[in-house]
Amino acid sequence: MTPLDRAYAQMAANDADDAARLTYYERLAEAELVLLVDEEAREGTIVPRLFQLEDGPYVLAFDSDDKLSAFTGVANTYAALPGRVIARQLAGQGTGLAVNLGADSAMLLPPEAVDWLAGTLDHAPEAMEAVPTGFHEARVPQRLLDALGQKLAHAGGLASHALLAGVSYSDGRNGHLLAFIGAREDAEDALASSAAEALTFSGIDAGEMDVVCLPDGPAARRMAEIGLRLNMPAPVAPERPEPSAPGSDPARPPRLR
Image (cartoon, rainbow, N blue to C red; front, side):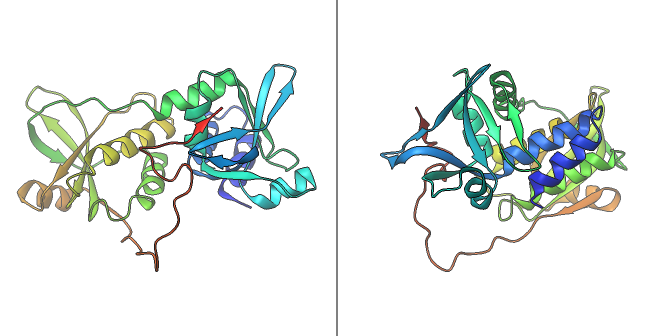
């Protein structure tokens, strides 16, 4: 079973569990999906095959080419894209997303669900200034730690590691602080967005977590004494450059038309 299969099974077994449903959407956004298309990509433009259902047009995507072949029974032209890229490109077009049709994890996401997922993924954290006055032990649900672990597993090389601790501020506010240690200069926005997604998809309604990048100094050492250390995998250098594929550059997402 793929991670998306397992998330679907957990959601199906716990229909009233919002956290399980959010986990499914998170796995969908993270998965590389094969999107059934009418023709090969040309000049960065992908033309997905549309299927007209009762509530409107849908595109078909699968989390493996085996599932795609099993559903269609023939050889297919497809584009491999992250789920988050597909959702963002479909948002606002009134087009739904059919996932893994013919498999046990088959799911129909109507246009409003696609729009919600894209909007959730595009929700940027707010920048603010605050002065910490003290740190204390982190008290967060395990599902948030699990969500952070999933995100940091894909962020190897952006920072050395992360530290999570409770924090008090000079304005009387209390919360939690996630500090990335030894972060690359250009990685702060990406790390903050990943942490914000982890908080959103963890299903915590009233959670507050600030994110900061810190050098290995007094504040980081104090957080390390009483907080939780979250390891980040070292990046694995490819043996040779891979060819550029549609959707591989976040700054230049493919156009779906």
